[in-house]
Image 1 (cartoon, rainbow, N blue to C red):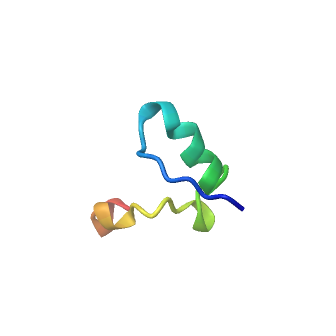
Image 2: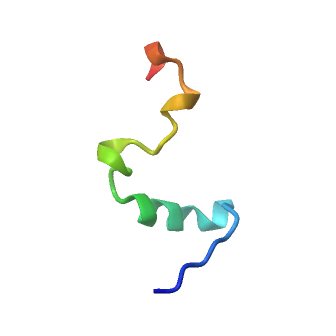
Length: 41
């Protein structure tokens, strides 16, 4: 398998959605919980 690394741009957003799947990676988490305060998460 060949892996390619590209900068995330608006044009490549579809690639991120495809990587994480329909509901995000771990049951809806897109690994951004650390950016949100607990009460807002």
